[in-house]
Image (cartoon, rainbow, N blue to C red; front, side, top):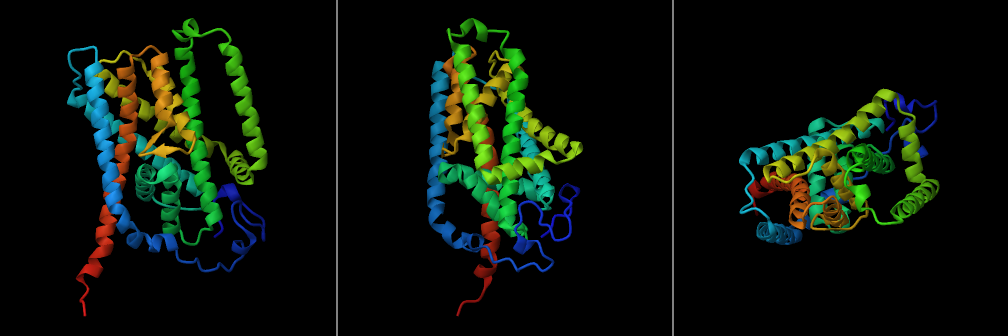
Length: 352
C-alpha cells in the first residue's frame, strides 16, 4: 500500500518509508488474516474473571488511598464540589480526544487513513489494555491489533513505525510542557532548597541522557527512520502534531488543576505542569502494574519537593491516574459491546 500523501513522494519503483520491496510494487499481496484478532473472542473468555479481579483491586486500592488522604488532610474534611469534578472530567475527555487526533494525524503521515471516531476508539481500547495487560505492552499491542483490523493492506512494519512516531510525539509534548513550566518554578522555591552539587549532578545526568539518546538513535534503525520521517514534514504538519501533543498534556494539567482547586490545594498551573511532566516522563520505562507506573512515584516526589504535603501530592497524582482509568473504563465498555455484538449471531443461530 503506497501512501498517497505529499510527505512521501517517491520515484517510480521506490518504496515508501516503512515498507519493503515486496509491498512497494503494483501488485499487492493479500493480507493474511490477523490471527490475534480472530482468536480474541475465544482467548478472552479465561481472562474475563482476571480482568474483573483487577478492576476490583484498582477500586479497593483507590478507596484505601482516599481513606489515607482523608485521615492525613490538614482540614476538617476533604470535599470537592461537583462542579470541579465535572470540569475535571470534561477536560480529561478533551485530553483523550487530543491524543486520539494526534494518533490519526500521525497515521495519516504514514499513509494509513482512519477516521477521528476510529482513532478515539483505538486510543480508549489501548488504555484498557494498558491497565489489564502486564508490563504496559498492552498499550501498543492493542493499538497494533486494531490497526491491522482497520487497515489490513498496510504492512506491519509501517504500522509499527507510525505507532512509534506517535509515542515519540507524545514524549516530545510532555518535554515541551515541562520545559515551558521551568521558568515558573525555578525562580521560586527550588533554588533555595537545592543541595550543594545539584547542578553538577543535573549536568551529568543530562549529558548521560543525551549520549544514551544519541547511541539509541544510531543503533536503532527503526527509531532513526521515524525521526527522519518526522524531520521531512512540512511546517504545517509539524505545527499540528506538536500542537496536538502539547494540547493533550496541557488539558491533563488543567483537569488535575480543577481537582486541586476544588480541594483547596495551593498550587499554580506552572508548578502542577512541571510535577505532572516529571510523572509522565517516569512512564517512559515499560513497567506497569494495574496502570500504575514508576511515574506515580516520581510525581509524588516532585510534588513533595515543590512543598506540598504527602497527602496533597498523593491526591493530585491519583487524580492524574484516575484520568487514565476513566479512559480505560470507556475502552472496557467498547470491548464489552463488541463482544456482545460478535456473540449475538452465534447465540441466535439454530443448534442441531
